Length: 107
Image (tube, rainbow, N blue to C red; front, side, top):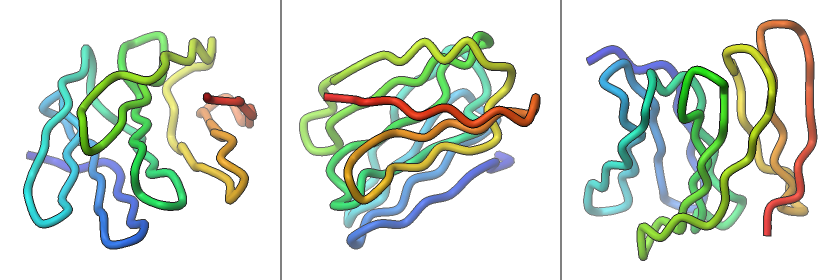
């Protein structure tokens, strides 16, 4: 399927795709289901957490990569996201088509 985004941190790769999944590759493949096309993904600096756009409202789901446990949902209120990034301090940054950048604390 078409892939829309890729990130690489600490030996871990994440991708978002048209098939409503975020994929993680770290020696084995894991998939995280989404409610909409995954246009944006991000890995935390150490590669242990995955964030991805999940839904037409551009909510962001954050998961622990190893346990696949959902850690948080961020309701961005933005249009379709075209970028997600984790800062070195662990803050989540979302970028959307309306030229808006937002910063989030995710615990």
